[in-house]
Image (cartoon, rainbow, N blue to C red; front, side):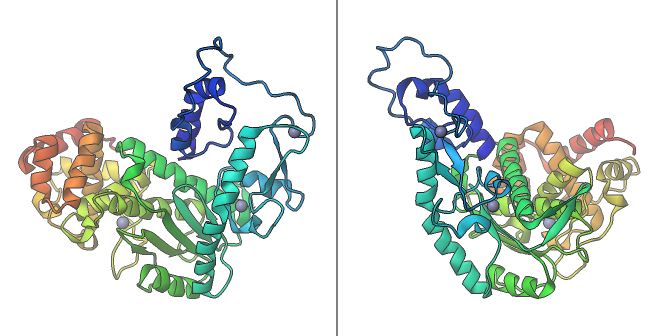
Length: 410
Ligand SMILES: [Zn+2]
Ligand SMILES: [Zn+2]
Ligand SMILES: [Zn+2]
């Protein structure tokens, strides 16, 4: 959780600077616990007057007092991408910097920076071993980068982002950053602690059909041309990223947002996939909710056998749901609450999204509780009553009124 870490590090910084030279610099943003588990505060602090907010290191021209230099074996553009990741196959093949892209500045002392670099190097061999196993599984060298919560393999050579075409190395970091953003958004919105997840999420974006067929079979235990997910433990998503399935960057990005949300929900403790236990409305609804949040469009469906790129009202679901409510044409709540993810109709997908939309604005913390109860095999009606004090009938009435009052007509 890089952004949160930076924030927390910034909050703790005055304390740490005052007490210890081994504090982390904010530009690296280590994991939150590194910043918050500062037991070095005792001793010596009371002797010192209030320190200024920043520690002043002796000026160094060579590194601009950052304490580190780009490794001579890497291009600047490559090394700059590595600051916030734990591993990247694009810079790994290097002895000098241990695969970090950076080395300590020989002209000055920055023990804080040295510690961050050393910690990163220390974790590198373990990650490298895991990555090598993945390479061996596929029988070729994968392009993979690892951040705090994700392992991303990205096999598209290039992709147009807006008006600019990015190459593979920049792309993998961009997509990793987007995934971490989603993680942060999910955990912040639903008030979920980091400790509620145990493993990194594995995402594979393949560059051809054959690799998708192989990769999904090997990493998700099921071969399919379209996206395949392994829910619950070892959360994994495998998808072919080519134009045939995703028109461009936005469509691919949205597909990953949708499917990674499914993974997040199923891998959160208590670990379970509710999509095949009559929790389809919540499983799909939440995945759609994050699609709509970033794009105002929902166009990803998780059917077992059908084309996933269907269209319902151009993906603009709020006006579509409002129209259904106004015309009294909404599918029955009781029916929607009894569906698995792969049996929801298009209309039911849209109202499921809206149910989640309604419950999130009502109380996100209670929605998290409801989802937890559902993962513990509690039926929707009981979980709804426990978390929100609503019967199914009350829920339907309140939800319909809210849709009428707040959704746009177009
Ligand atoms: Zn220096
Ligand atoms: Zn990289
Ligand atoms: Zn889905």
